[in-house]
Length: 498
Image 1 (cartoon, rainbow, N blue to C red):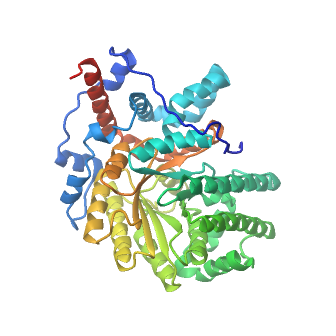
Image 2: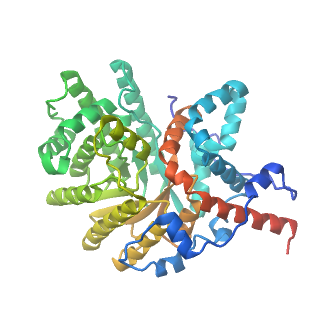
Image 3: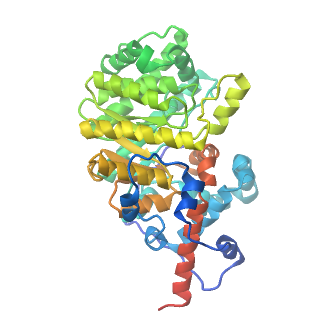
């Protein structure tokens, strides 16, 4: 991977766009095809979100958060950006393109050459979903987001899965480089001067996935049956006293120690700069280790405020119970707790693995069960926040309009101020804009997850995310309808002013 470029070429940042011609090309006609009809509330709830828990009314939230107002939701987007979003989101709706994305990417690079390929990516997929590869490029993205009341949640596109690395020395060098990049990104986040500086971290960018998987086998229930290991690792972060994990070889214990040292450097710097660091959950076969290490870091770095967060995947059975156990464990040590709530993104692979290895599928039985779990997790966290707002922070990471409305309404009922920072909303950059910009316009704290890096570094990562988020991609039809409405409105104004 190439190092991240942190040098700006100019202190002046500009953003330009070409003007639209009145006539419509065939490609534009394709993007605009299909009539736009108002979606009734009953149909929207049935087809898009499933059941909503009866606790709390969303009427107040609906009057405040206007997802349907395409004129204002997309007012900060240039017309070429709307065209790009329509084109890219349409492409992403085709399973064949997403499934074969890596091969198509390599083929197009070979046919077009590096220069044309780079230009194409900048105008399409890379430009839609990635923040850039320099501080100047990133600031263009940040400036646009801030105009809509949205903050950046920087994501470093690095990770390691089981069996992906073989040469230990080469692997350790790669992890050291990943650490350097992560530390550089902490400096970037700090210099952005957001109200709540935050960043996503994948632990498998710093610790081998194989080690995390073996540690998960020996410590399957960290906050219930493996508390001593959590506390031993927390001690290591304070005093460099490394615990010996019995089911790891001596070499693997050394690799784990090296990985924990990298984490120590990253999270110490994050604490010094007052950055809220969110640890991503990944596959179920390595999640217990990620959970264990994150809880250990909470014990060490969350004394004054909740700066370390763990991600809870609500499409998994047992998430509600895991969240309750973790909260009680952290509370028993008198430190702060932070969580990012997601539905989950690894559904296809988890189902495939459970079928292949003949163990019970960890995924909820239906979409409604996942919605129910998500809303119960919200209730747990909001109740704790009401009791002690300085000790709890939650990221409501959802593209689902009804879940967002439900969360906003429950914030009112739990007396949680939308600007105090104890609850923020989050979506992936490049999709769910009608959710993000509507929240920002209504005064809620909302952030976009923005991957940062070169085309070579970020696109393989992005393709994995697109594959994993297939259910989200399949649900962007409504966003495309709103984008088409916004585009038609602009074309009408341009062709028939006044």
